[in-house]
Image (cartoon, helix red, strand yellow):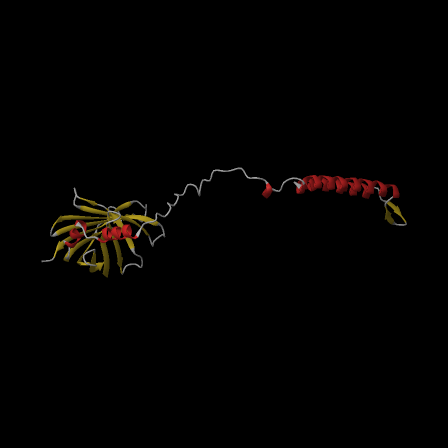
Amino acid sequence: MKESLLSHLLPAILSIKFRISSKKAIVNNEEVVPFSSKIYFMKRITFTICAAALLLTSCGDEKKPDEIKAEPTVSTTADSKPKEEPWVPVDSATAMKAMMEYAALGEAHKMLAKSNGTWIGEVSMWMAPGAPPMTSTMTMSNKMIMDGRYQVSEAKGDMMGMPFKGMGTTGYDNHKKVYVSTWVDNMGTGIMELEGPWDEATKSMTLTGKVVSPANGKECDVKEVYKIIDDNNQLMEMYGPDLQTGKQFKNMEIKLTRKK
């Protein structure tokens, strides 16, 4: 507000100076302002400065922006985030009972153990939808660890003409009621984490998660489907993004046969 008033008063002051300058006279080859013009100038400039002082004083009585009580506004960002639920205190007996249930072995863990042993895999890979598959073979060895709570899988083979090694861990989370899985291999430096349910009707496990594509740095969805055909045959399908469109398609299939 003050800056606005000064911007309006400044032209008035300058116009006064211009007017008085235009009334200069030449005396002995020097420009001299007549005394009457000086008086006129002093009166006008004094009036203008006084007016400015009064206006600035009145503006000083106004509340500063930070003193004005802000009206409550509806937040569109912070309030939209889910609120954290308060911590629920538990006694030691309840906590111990919950931990025992969380660590208990169940039918889901027994089902994993049925896949223990060595498997031969026929691998088909597609670099793009509709592209011809690249084929190779691999071996996978499964064993249970942590007293039967997790299954560790070690894979060896060739991929795109290069030696391939990978390791995965699969378990069943009693609290989440889903299967959980991690995977690492010598083709990258990240850890893939997936989870998902078991479908008894199709005898399959569908695991989903997110990974970052090293090609463009974008986070993308991935999916793995494990299907148990019978005690000696399994099928794994991997779905990931098409590098050109980002749309998900089946980019890998492994037919697993138990080694006799």
